[in-house]
Length: 287
Image 1 (cartoon, one colour):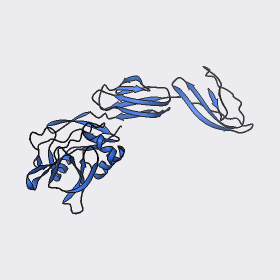
Image 2 (tube, helix red, strand yellow):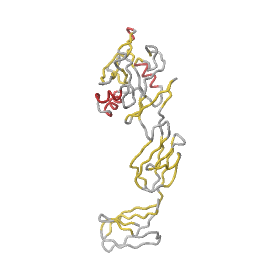
Image 3 (cartoon, helix red, strand yellow):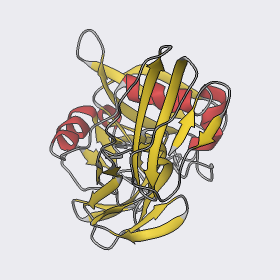
Image 4 (cartoon, helix red, strand yellow):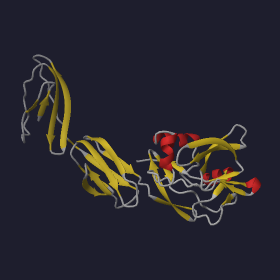
């Protein structure tokens, strides 16, 4: 048993389950009764000549973790704790929890306070590659967003490419929006989504080289240019990447698009009949 006030901490007794009588000076004190992973905490305010009785109900510190991927490894403070799903007794206090599985983004949570109540986490690990349509795409986590790591290349009516087109196809806005809506969890990024991404990377000038091909984020924006349906013409290929957002203009005939090169990012309203590259985004949910 440990008795603490703002001046010092005093260990009263060890390995003794008999009732203890302790004299304290008037004031506020914290009492902890602990045996390995079992403990009881309480705070008292002692008055002069007052007797205070405490019945310590010692509890367990229990950690429970379930995961959508069986066999994921669970680490506590850097040490392997077990395999998901897991339920066990741990020492109370502040901890760092990690859930790790090859091919998935890690779950990490720091400064977790585990006390005598059961602490439970339902962890959803996100795969580093996803299947969309007939193709497989890498995904990249940037801040609290998950982005496709390559341009969409599904062959849809209203999409175009300057064949061959392994780098991705160009889509009219309506086609891109409709296809994004058909994919659970994913969406065509809004103006707010793009702004969140750019702000996380330090603004338009700092974000551009990080998002362009070869950048640190692995976003890999490629200069595939755009397609002008009215003129049956591919334009700007090799110079800039053009991406749709879901944000429309006031007259609904145009939508906000983003231009990316190695130096800067610009945004303008464009006619929806133009065809741009498409990236999809989703939110990063850790539990």
